[in-house]
Length: 120
Image (cartoon, rainbow, N blue to C red; front, side, top):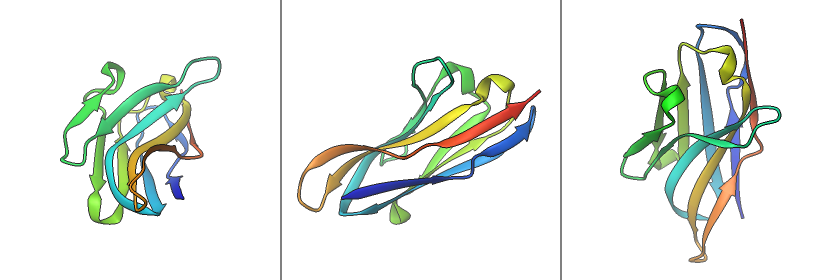
């Protein structure tokens, strides 16, 4: 079993910053891509950013230049630094990881989500 535990969400004023973390634990052999998704009320879940094991990154157009994704492979942890936050960034943020388990099975896992609320 693999668990993803997110942290760092909260309430912030527009223009502020937050840093999310996602720690993976359990029967992990290695983790390929790790990503952050978000889902606002009444909307579909969307990709915010992801990062490969080698460090290649991809961002949604709406967050380019404001958000930075990073990871620490030794700690099986991903981060999302969010700057210049806007009210439209308000959503539940979910961590996602593509994991090779110690049982040589490749599976995709989701965290439980962390709420980010940006006030105007």
